[in-house]
Length: 372
Image 1 (cartoon, one colour):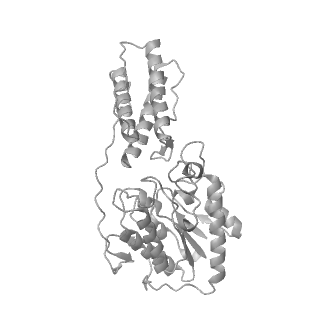
Image 2 (cartoon, helix red, strand yellow):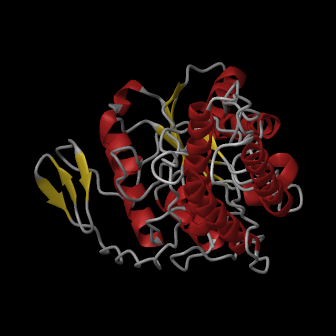
Image 3 (spheres, helix red, strand yellow):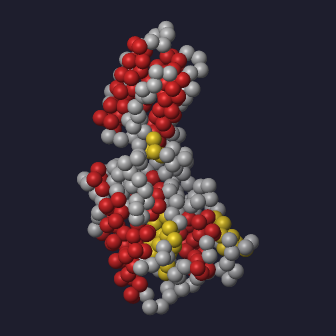
């Protein structure tokens, strides 16, 4: 079995050192339960729709010859709802249909299973909450489910018997929003393995798709707004996907991450004020000024001021927001509150320590501002 999916199938259990990659991951645990060899090709942050750095569903489908597999499990969708650029349901269904057609053109007898996403609480407490493109989680997940059915793919819907709810999210999700903890991923794998085993018993004959058009000359599949290309010949779908809505501009903050250049204390104080203001905006608190102080030279009092200021900000973030953890462009977990100022007495070490924290703060805060 090959598994194509996002960070949940990859095994992310939340951000931070307290949330390592699941062991076993959901795909591996399914394989262990069924006695199958499993190739887990899930990639964090990926979607059905769009082509981001060549890692989403269509580019992934192009990388493999599915003649080498008996079963495919697809586990995408949460990022189609959560992340910019926001996909329309038509774009998601179009990508699903074309990708499934390519898989079956490689191997007409392959079995394709679709797992709906688990709930996301990035935009609110209910599945009716709208993302920045004006689409609700319910609408997106229903569209994925319908497309799976239209393509004769069995589909597993977690909404029928939820493991994760808004009320239990702080126990079931490592980040309180998206990624299930190890224990929940283990339960997910048990349910999926049992479901797949039952479906396998019922599928005595290969599934014959009735909606996708299998090309006579299958080749590399390339997706754009209105066509799918197979070795140079175009297949035009029944419906042209609707254009992606233009999301509203995202407000971000820009911090000085080289505070040692120029006036050190002015640079640091400027960052403190920006961080403080942004955290209050995210938490919904009334705006107040950060209590800055100025110093003419490096001294014990300056050092104590820096320690107290950092502690004030990190404690406020923890108290008001619970967690600000996210991942930077390298996949490294970062946050506002997960920081302790260096104990070194060397000014260079102090500057390096603050610069690293300011960079992490900028990443974590901008991730939160994006979801306001």
